Image (cartoon, rainbow, N blue to C red; front, side, top):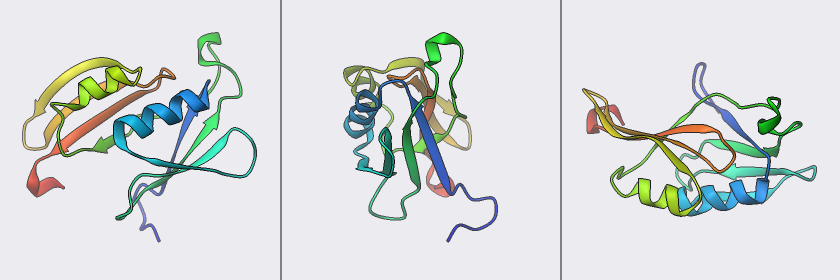
Amino acid sequence: MARPNDLAHFAIHADDCERARHFYERVFGWHFLSWGTPGVWMIRTSLHAPVYGTLQQREHPAASGGGMRGFECTIAVADVSTLGDRIVKAGGKILAPPALVEGVGTVIRFEDTEGNPVSAMRYEEHRH
């Protein structure tokens, strides 16, 4: 059960859910399970203390200026240095290369295949 102020769920809105699912499977190894209505998948981020999310079809394509763009989340990773290559190979785009955030860790900003901005960070030991 989530405690107050903990991230309890997230949703990724996509124009092409299959493309987005393959992106997140290839980059982070997340698991997807078809859930409820067509165009919705339950996301399990890991087997150990996962944060659950959904991948769901946008009501209106992002390119039309409509549709949910979501809010940016940061994904904890073990290694930022090789992540950029995986992101690009899976169809994403690097928005900002790895950068040190003093006292926190190293972060990379990217855009997934659906135009959603995302950050991934290797946190310093005392932060994670």
